[in-house]
Length: 552
Image (cartoon, rainbow, N blue to C red):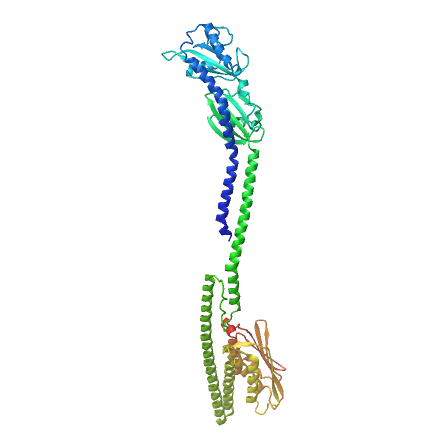
């Protein structure tokens, strides 16, 4: 949603910035208008001076007149605009005065004035610097036009001057005089303020110098007093520049106000867009997806997957729901197939263990029958021992197929049944005198470990029953199986007379078998004698595989 607003924000931000730049450019537009108005007025005055002196220079009879006639004509010309023009005069090619509208000594040289060498060099209309008139002793702006001989050489020059008071005078009906400043600048860099213009409103000297190098230019920046200004310059004629300045603080403030308003409008617009998007996403995407997630969470194998409610549900959500419905049906079929396969496997495993148990019991019965036909006591004893071992294995397989995992079984029920079978098989009428007591924690072992444990117990209990209680001696055989951390401790002890030195030395077959079964369990058999005999085996407990844990 945030990404969706980026193009809108960029477009709206660009529009706001464009409006800000347009409002900010109002200062330059206004100063250009003021420059053209000022240039029209002051340019007209300078243009009129140029036309008058150029017209006099073009008069072929000007030099033909005598000095007094020339003086009179120039005086009449000055008298037409006495508040504008200070004087008109004629100099020869070397700058010597020939005639003048105001009384002045003829023959005086004015070659030191700045415009004399300039017109000698350019042979074109030239403005002089702002100066004090030699005759009028008032501030004037002189303008000179050449009189050229037929061969193009400078024959004479006609000059006239405009009162600076006239240029500085501001019309009474001028609009916005207090809001802008106007200056005239000559080639010498002299600055002439017009009206109430202040020098503090000028640009810094370096920027002013760069501005004057261009005939027409506009810049903005801080003035010499630090206030923001916009300036525009125009070259009225060669050697005379017009500079107009306009304070733009209010314009900049108005532009910032425009930008702030646009940004506020943009923010409100984006908020409205986000709200509309959020409402649309909530109604069209989030709510249907939440409902779909609730249906998926409530579904479990064996339960039908609920179909989506009717109404305005997006097409994508309906497609996803149909896909989930198909997946749920496929999972249900797969689960039924797996359940059937597991049941078939359980039946086969149960049948295998049942048949093994039956076969072992048949073998045990055959061994028992064979023992009854044997006359030698030692042979009968060996047959009985083999029978007990086979019977122990048969009991183990019965417990395995009774357990649903077929790989692990609980030891306590097995130990109780095994001890009962051994007591009945080995008692020979002594069952009332020798008791077998079980002290076992609830421990599960795998099939391989259970076989070794069953055979080890069979050997240990058989040895105790046959050797620890002679001559009708009474006693107890204790089978203890405890867990200590990740290990199990099996102890078979009796309170009989012991089994002699053979057990301790490890020479007897039963002792060797016990040690072998203990080694298969991952432990070591330890024998102890004293008040009876005990066999202890400490072995590690193997964790059930993950697959068997899931089945259990």
